[in-house]
Image 1 (cartoon, rainbow, N blue to C red):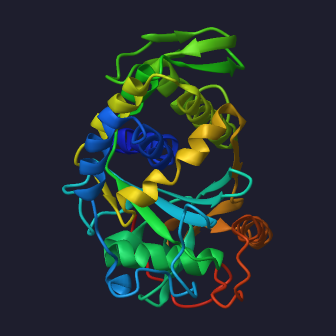
Image 2 (image 1 turned 180 degrees about the vertical axis):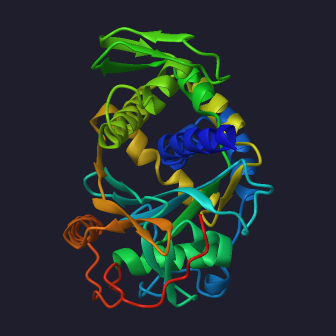
Length: 341
C-alpha cells in the first residue's frame, strides 16, 4: 500500500508538469511536413465529444464556438492516475490544470487544482473532492464542475494517461535549473541515493529533473509546488526554442494511445503562434491557497475564498470573458458526500 501511495504521488507530479505541454508541442511539430501525418493521426484517433456538447460543440457559457486562431481560449488538462485499472471515465483524476491562452499577448495562465479540493460536483448536487468528478460523471462532470468553480467557460479539454516525463526532458536535451540546495534522492526505479545534484545552476536530465520535482526532504509542500512550476516553465521555454523538429517527433511518439481530447488537429495547429513566441512566451502559474481539514474523518483541501476569487478574476481577465458570474462556486454550503479518497 505504501508503494502504491508513493507511486501515485510521483504520477501526480508527472501530470502537473507534463500535461500543459501537449497542445503547444503538437501545434509546433505539425508545421514540419514529415511530422504532420504522425501528429494528425495521434489527434484524430483521440477525438471524443462531451455528451453535453454533441450538437453545438461549445460551452454553454459561450454565445458562439471559439476559434483558437483568433480567440482567447481555455483548456482543462486532466491527468488520469495510471495506477488505476483502466483509462476510462470511471477513474479519478490525479491532476487537473486549467489554462487560459491569450492570443494577442501570446501568454498563458495556469492553475493547478488540488485533487482534494472540496467543491460542488455539478450533476451530483453535493460537496466532494474534485478528483471524484471524473469518476462519478466522466469528462462531462469534470469539465462542468471546473466551469462552475471558476465561472469561466472551459472550451477544450485534454486528458492524458501519461508518464513520459523522463523521455521528454531527455528528448529536449535537458533543462537548466538553479538548484537551491544539494540533493541526494532515489531514481525512478526507487533505488536509493542514485541521484545526486549539486546546488547552483545545473543542466538536469530527465531522472534528475524528476528527483528535483518530487523530493520532500529539504523543504515543504509549498516550495515543492514552486519547484514543479519552475520545471514546467523550463520545459516549455526549452521546448519552444528547439529548432530540430525531430525532438518534437519524440514527444509526439511518446503520447501514443494516452490522449483523449475534443480539440481537432486544425485547432491544435493554431498554437504554432505560441511556438513562434519561443523563449518570450509569458507563462504564469497561479496558486489556489487553502488549508487541510478533516470532515467526517475524511481529508479535504478547503479552498480559501479570497484566493479563489483572485484566481478567478485573473483568469477571467486574461480570457477577456465578460460573461456574468452566474456559476459562482467555492462558497457553496450543501450536503457532503463522504466517499473516502
